[in-house]
Length: 261
Length: 257
Image (tube, rainbow over all chains, first blue to last red):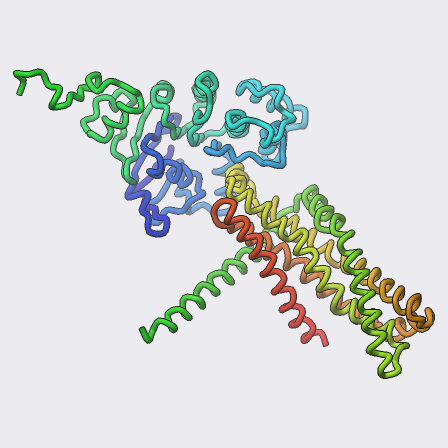
């Protein structure tokens, strides 16, 4: 279980998080939505222990991430998979070695077992045949898929996805989200997905939270967000899903039929 | 208004202390990691190849020219006092105690130190270091400690090459070009150069071997933003390493004499 309590974070004079509190239950995936530059990635980095909050705390399974040191922190991170927005692949390693890296370093698996596992996960993300290529030789979409393969290869208990489908063509994006869904079904990881592709992401998450201007405006089930009374939430969801305002019950005063109110 | 210079001085002092503290903590973390976990030997070997073997040619060239210049300058200076016979010890002592360690360190800073900063800096801005952390691994063990060990191992060896090549550069000028006897050149050298002198040179090169990775890795690890940040950090690393090498050389020379 991931729990954020009253998180505050500023960068120089810019206050990005202004008291964020969120809870993701065991085995649940939460979609974190909101406009660009509102601090969604900052939240993920706090959960992973890569950033320290100015105030507040993040607990994973009841343990404060910032209270953990040495082996305890290493143990937490060993259970965690993180898909970076940029991929963060090791530029000096090829696709195969990038995916194999965490297995070689953190598991007692033999070279043959590692090879089988890596090829299997590369097959799942549609990258068989690209094993020998270096990050500089592949497209942005392939970088993202390699990064996803690297994040999933150790079967993490907690997964943090930072825009997993951004920059991918619709077919690959669909495949990636299907893969996340099927891996979640198999492993039951607890996860947070930051994404702007609401229509697809809503199909695989159990909960949605909307971050706006450093605070959480909405938390609830995907179907509940459609009924939110908050105008900012309604506008964001309408535009992101390209739903006609009338379908959300948003009717402009000027468009009201004559004779009403 | 009156307080402005005082405020500025305070700000500069605080900034200096913050950086010095940051560098000390970085060194402390690297040392703890070096002694508490087994180093990545494959990375150490790779770094020895990069810092050591690939610097051999440039060390050879600079050593040869430094020795030749010393031979030429030393000959004409000593000639004024009728002490030509002491050219061998003069060249050898200058190289072994001073020029060998310092020039080798400056060459390695320019060739390998800048590359260390750029490599770690790029890994930082592309989140590769965060990715290592999130695999439950210590980035110091993978990126910093191998460079420290390689620097400490490679620099004394490069300095030894520099010294030997320089002594033969001085020999070429003093003996073959200016006509000092071969026996005089090497005989006086063995009379005047002691083991203590060689050990002093080794101490210096060992400390420079740790200093270069320390400064260059630190600058890369705490790089600013984007390509401009990496470029600035690389320049700062080379300048700071070079200044520290000369400063530390003075301190060690005062302490060892």
